[in-house]
View 1: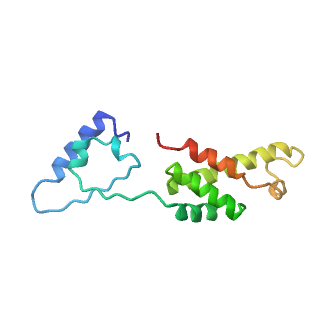
View 2 (view 1 turned 180 degrees about the horizontal axis):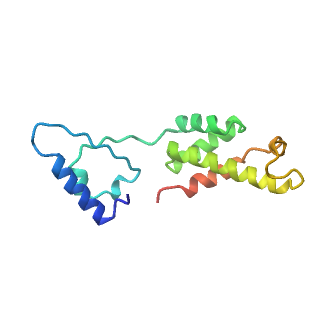
View 3 (view 1 turned 135 degrees about the vertical axis):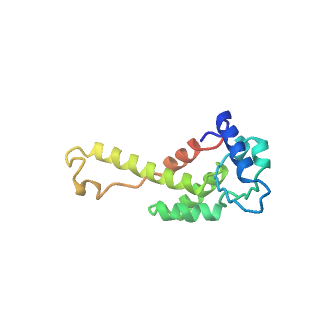
Length: 144
C-alpha cells in the first residue's frame, strides 16, 4: 500500500487504536518499508520501530558474487561500491541480477537467429551481463 495514501493512513491509525488498547494483551503488527519517511508521523509514533540498516559494501559484494559469478573481483568490488552509493538493498541486487541476465540472454538469442529462441544450445556461449549494465539497473532503482 502506498503510505502517502490518506485512506491507508487513516485505516492504519484506526487499526492501531483498536488493537493497542491498554487491556494487558500484546499484539505484534509487522510491516516493512524502505521509505519510513513516507509514513505519517502520527502513525510512526504509535509503533515501536525496528530499523535495519542497508547492507554494507562487503555484504553487497557477497550478494553480487552469488548472482554474477562471471564477474571478476575488481568488477564485483566496483559493483558493490556503486550499489552502496545508491543505497541498494538485497531485493535490488536480486532484481537487477535477474533482469540483466534475462535482457542479456534475450539480446544474445536475437543475434543468434539461426539457433532459435527455444534451442538449449543457443545459450551455451551466451556471455553474462557487463558490470555497467548491472550498475545502470541499480542506479535506476535508486531512492530519490
